[in-house]
Image (cartoon, rainbow, N blue to C red; front, side):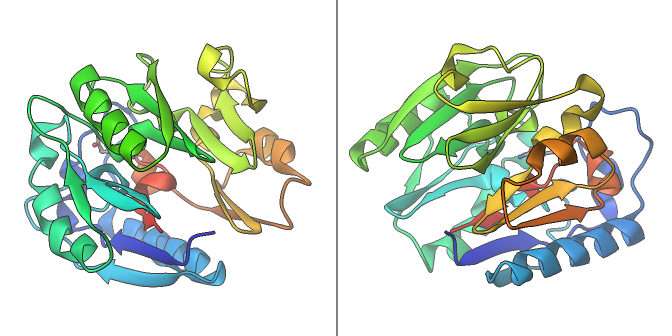
Amino acid sequence: MPTHAIVRLPGPDLVNGLTSASLGAPSWELALEQHRRYREALQSCGLKLTVLETAPGYPDCCFVEDTAVLTEKGAILTRPGAPSRLGEVDSMRPVLEEHFTLRTIEAPGTLEGGDILRMGNHFLLGVTARTNREGATQLAAHLYRMGYTSEMVPVDAYLHLKTAVGRVAENTVLVTEKLAGIPALEPYRRLVVPEEEAYAANSIRIGDTILTPAGHPRARALLEGLAPRIVELEMSEFQKVDGGLTCLSLLF
Ligand code: CIR
């Protein structure tokens, strides 16, 4: 169970965030409000929050998950595959150095935290347009030295692996129809969200609580009974720039 969360406030240039969605431009004001509620939800799970100021010039900087992979045995700074996001990592370094021994992903490797799904002591490493095989291989070596196992999971239908699959209970994932049949997920109980609610697959388990995006009733029904507390959060403004619940924090 994590005890801390690092988040970063979205800036007014969130409207220029990278996106493949055609949902229109996000409202910064509403994004700030949704982010405030997200922070409250993390605090209600008992997490101590570090809230970083926005980083001007980095429209996607609130999606801190992509900048690092954190474990209780050390942390790895990533090397985002989106060139506009590479510089976000430098500003995370001093923050993470306060808590972790840091390892790095080196060029030509690319890796974004949204591609890394932890299931116990095993990590699934999504290989996507943002995380290449070289980056995943470097991460696998770091994880191996820390005593973890991992495997690569090629994903081409989504931005990140965790766009389409989230850990919601021990050995249990919420997953989209497209990814439900992949071999890497066979060992786990799979709760399959219908395609029109695919966005809800990116839900998070924190202790006794599941955080899930509001407005996805069928996904919500699948979660019933899996946790004592289920909190629904409005995420519309982040969804407009391809961001989900996990992306907005680094938990440790
Ligand atoms: C991007 O395309 O990089 C951002 N607009 C969204 C990042 C979402 N991050 C995540 O799923 N971990």
